[in-house]
Image (cartoon, rainbow, N blue to C red; front, side, top):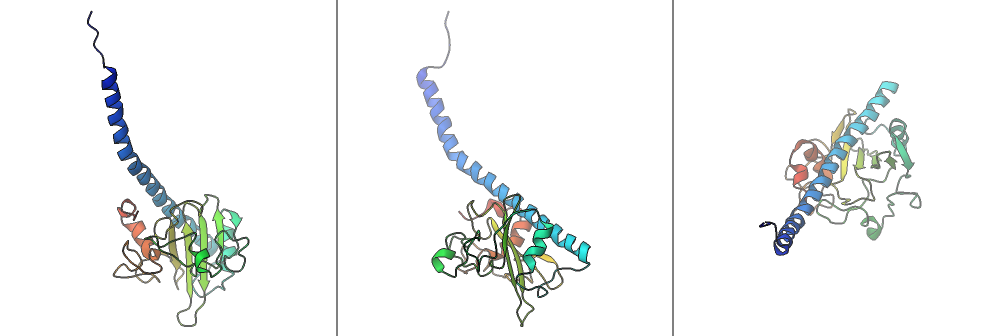
Length: 231
């Protein structure tokens, strides 16, 4: 009887081809899965922050608006309506306990986060409070009252936690702004602090020192945004 089957050489060749194909496709699959998780995390964070602000309004009858609160008042309000697991202080005055210390030193500030295209970032827009939610995401606050325009009120979220890469603005760190009417707006929308017609705040080629800050609006509205993140 004539038995038909694969020779050892044929099996080894087939396994080699499978290995090459896997090596070529696996990094893309892993990257796509990570980016999908970041997209889901952003949408979840947007919803969680919005719900907290709505609960505050339901209890007090008022909306939180830019210019209404001192720099230390925003964090305890938000923490009351959000499920938190750690209070990280404010970041500027308690560097020993902060998750993301802000010493004002260039070397220290560049160790955790970068711009969208991987350049050094300074933490001046993230140092009025920080805490970790039960899903591991890190909330960073900026609440400054300015005489000229009523101040700025930013809520930023590292959607996969500060211990997980890429730790870049516009990739896993996203900024929101509460405007003068108390509306939570994704940063980069027209009228927000980091809106730009020429994409100065959201471009892989921009040299702006806060590049990536204006990407939140795009990330929420452009269905291909997370497919085209800079490497």
